[in-house]
View (cartoon, rainbow, N blue to C red):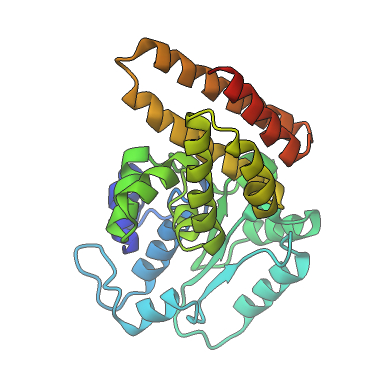
Length: 312
């Protein structure tokens, strides 16, 4: 899916706003793209860079096939720099290298673009260095900052950028986008319940751990649905060894929530069974709270099994 296709489908208002700014030559020298992960911030950054350097613009759209578009896509264009965290943070040396790069002579075009992904991860020195850069912008320089945590961006940096808000993807749009990328409908439905991020969902779908976990939780759900104590043994033998990291543990519980919510849709006409499923959903949410309180994952899951079995 091209940047244009993604933005038209998921962020049409933002896309139209940026296109209009280009068309009327009213571009800001600095943008701050703010929104949840996967809402199209980086697609917008890449589209904008391509649009500014494309040698074959048609109907205010980059062609995606000229030399400039291809080099931007491959992060090989000398006038478009993308900065990402090195480890956990963006460091001052990265910003200084960026400034040094743009101060060199001999660029292929007068316009220069830099994109800072996860701008909220700049350390204090990096943020202050960038601030000086923004206070005295060079002619033809365009800065694009991307963040999913606006509150961590210095107010002084925010005040020097045009803020563009990206809205979370709707579950329907995310599902359709995943299916269009070749993800199966059942998996796409599950993924759309776990994240609002298209990029994260695609990453999940291609992850070996995720696909093993999905099958494991489905088996666990079937045991629990029948109040079968095999579910208790299954926690020890399969689930606990599968989820060593905290994020994985929460993902397993989120998957279980999904499967029981799917079951609830089937039980609408059966009021006693519907109430039972609602009670189970509440127990799973309580299990998540215990996991957040640092109760051991295996203990949380074993207790959850026993509480669900008692409902029968």
